Image (cartoon, rainbow, N blue to C red):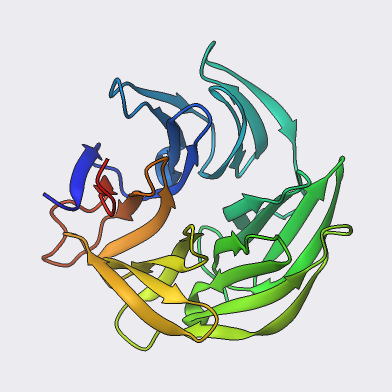
Length: 272
């Protein structure tokens, strides 16, 4: 079966898959369950740690050691010892929570916010945190979602879901500042762009909320190249493993096509 259902915990909203290629481990979160997961594809072992508020994003620090964002702040989590420790917080306010994020090659933690518990237009921002300092780099977003860097790190692709577009920003590696360039992809179908990752050829793979698929796009011309369907409507994010195959997170929906919503899937694009 392709895609293959890997895990299904009856979660409402799985998100944020990140693959540690050095140690062959997958991390992802169940946002509303406050859970952070560590999955070993070889042994099939699944570890989890619960925080005290909604979680959204994971940054890899070391083997089985990560930084996870929660409504209450960022926490260092050690899956070797199952210890969690508060690291820092950004002044985001009580009426928003963190959502998708990414780390640049200099070590900056970049993360977006969105209204919580209610989504509100332009209530979010994208922040950059580095050396105990943070700043806004993109303002007035509604649902800050997928982020991906170009191979040379000079372009940041970013999704604010309600726009149904992928935006291109110039990225300054020295300062961490961004400058809007253009919209490079527009979604005109039922699906809205959610999480996103880049493949080895520089193409963008976008999870489509409401579209029951992940789609592949060429950011240089905005053309859709490929589409991989999933057996659930709300597809939230994706990432590549060491074999250039995709792990995909999903969420529940009210549609009839919701049997496996909230599951973790694996799409084998390349034979191992």
